[in-house]
Image (cartoon, rainbow, N blue to C red; front, side, top):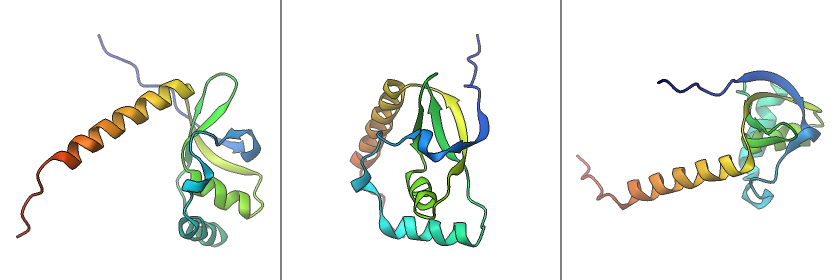
Length: 113
């Protein structure tokens, strides 16, 4: 039996409709936001933000710095890749990511050279 990948949709979303509560604003790095702002001003290609849609809310999964840069520039919309998902699913995925990261960090360092 094969599992199906979640259906992904690329669309332009109104920034005000995107829930930003999955990551606290104090985690934003001003240098990163400023860099994205400059790239947006130059109309450089920037990948879409990743958003989960639970049937009611669009929850930002990745792209906090891009959303903040667009917001500071007065933009009303941003390109987003939308997949089905809930806050609890995102939290579980994040916990798996942290566990894998901790396991990698616990491995002995390889000698250089």
